Image (cartoon, one colour):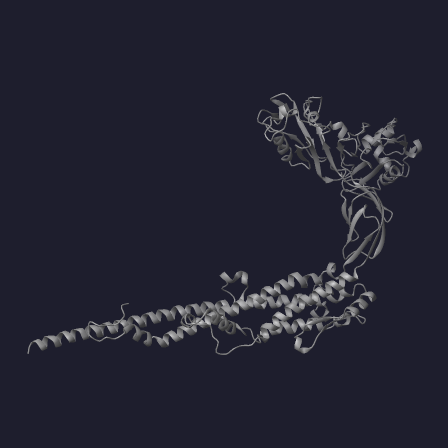
Length: 636
C-alpha cells in the first residue's frame, strides 16, 4: 500500500504515521492476543516439564520400590570362589547351602591338531592349494550339532565344490550359514581351524560324516586336512540315546519306569561292564538283577560305581545320557557279553558303544554334574537358578554358600528413595510457591527491539515466574503424595505398620513435606523383621482389587503419580507430543488463540487498506482543487 509523505497536492502530510496512529488501538489488541498465546505456550511447557519429571520418578524410582529385589536385597558369601559365582534374588531364603561340583558344563569343540596350511595363507588363498588338496574337489560332508544334521553344499547337486575361487573363509562362512548350533572359524596366526558349539551340555555335540569318504575318510579328506579327526572320535566322550524311550502312547518314559520293560518285560540278571578310559568296573559286581529297579535306580547305580562317568535321564525328552567327568575320559561298554546286557545298552537305552579314546583336539559337549544340599543335579549349562539363588559355575570342588539379608543395601536403597522423593517434592513445591510478578507480560516485538539482551532476559525471567503458582493440579499431587507417605498401611499388624514406624518422617511445615530418614530406627526395624521394608513399601502392590489404604507406600505413590500424569496429559499433553498435540486443554486454547490472531490481523489489514484508500482519495481531490484554483487564477 502506498504511503509516505504526500506532496503533489501540497498537503505535506506523513500518511504512514497517521495510519499507524489510527491503527494503534487495534495493534494494542493484537499485542495482547500474542502475549496471551505466549503465556499459554509457556504454561504448556511448564506442565510438560512436570509431566516428564513425574514420569521419570515413577519409572526409575517408584516402580522399583514395588519390587522385592529393591526392598529385600540379599547378600551371598561363598568360601570357594573358584567353584562358582553366586547371587541371590529377593525370593531366596536366608540359608546356608553346600555345593559340590563334579563336572562343569562345556560346549563341544573341534580344533585343528596341527598347522593346516600347505602354502602361506592370504584372505583369498585358494582352499585346495591352501590345504594341499586336489583342484576342483567335490566334498560330500554332513555336519550335526547333536539334534540336527545338514549337508554342506554350495552347488545344485547338494555337495560342496572347491574350485579356484573358494577360500578357507568361504568355507567358514558356508558352515556358519547352515543354521546349526555349530560355529566355524579360522585363525591365520595359529593356522588352526575351529568348530565350536555356542551352547554347552551333553545334548550339544559336533559330528562329521561323509557318504563317499572325501569329507571325513582318509588322509586326503577335508576333515583330515583341517586336522579335525573323524566322527568316530567325536561321539566317544558323551553318549546320548539315539531316540526317545517311550511308553505305549509314545510319551517319554517316567524315571520311575521299570527297568525290565526296557529288555522285554521280564526281570533278568545283566552282565554289564563300564570303562571310563582308565578303570573298568562291572555293574552290580558283575551280576546286576533288574528286579525292583527303575531307570532312576540305574542312573544312581552307575553314578555310584566310582568311575569318572555320570549318568542322567531326562524324563522330558526320554533320553538317557552317559558323560565323562574329565576332558580325557571316555565312555564305553566292554563287557556286555550276554544278550540281556547288550539289549539294555543298545536297544533299551539306545546307546551306541564306542571304546575308542577321544582325540586330544576334540572337546565333547557335556552337562554340569553337581550336588546342592545333597541333591544330585545335571545341568546343561553352567548358569542356572535354583530357589532364588543364581549359580555361575567356574570349576570343580566343594563350596559353602550363605544367603543373608543385605541390611546395608536395604538402608542404602531407602536413602536413595528419600533423595529421589525429596527432589520431586521440591520441584513441585517450587512451581506452586513461585512468585508471580504483576505488570510483567511477555514482550511485544516493539518492546523487545528497544531493549538490550540482558534486559530482555531479566524481564522474561519475571514474566515466566509463577505461571503455575498455587496450581490446583500440582497442589493436589503434593497433598496426595504426602498422604501416601504418612498414612498407616491397613492390614499390617504390630508396631511396624507405617513409614514413620521404620524411620521415614516429614520435616517441618516449611519444608513442604520433604522426607527424613532415621537410620537407627530403620536398622532396628530390619533386625526385628528383615522383610519389613518390603511390607511397608510393597504390600498388596499387585493384588487385584486392593484398596489404596491397604497398599504399601510404593504402590500408593505409583498410583498417585500415574493419576497425576493422566491429569497433566489432559491439561497440556507431553513434550513428546507437543508438535502434534491437538487434544489437550491448552492445545485447544492455543488453537483458538491462533485463530483469533489470524482473524484480527486480517481485520487490521482491511482497516489499513481502507485508511490508505481514503487518504489517496483526499490527495486526488486536493490535487484537482489545486489545479482548478490555478486555472481560475490564470483567467484574471
